[in-house]
Length: 174
Image: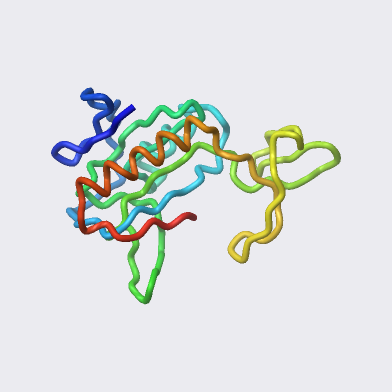
């Protein structure tokens, strides 16, 4: 699997990936980095995509990667997507206007209840499918690891973005 960028659109093995335009975008940008996110939603590919392409949600990303590693592009890479909210990095505010946003499908932070891990929206997962972690940003909790297919796609897209945009010098995770 080889990804490349042509005219700010993502291609896999010479074919364009699915494109579902999000209405939640604005002017042009020159990306200086990539910001990878967890969707924190149901593990249905359409769930995260529906939210990221819904006008009323006021959020978007450049790419969504489902649990099977399938990417869908929502915003061209030279346009501002609304993935970072009110944000600041290295003393500069407004990460949306500087970073490409990639969403990886995941239920987000989970809470242990008995022998299950529970998402904020009520779905439950076996503890055997999740891992415990503690971070300064999110505190202690349980997380479902990304799939090998998701990570393979994610790293291949990062490589393509780096090749297409020499201005990219950072990769952040949120």
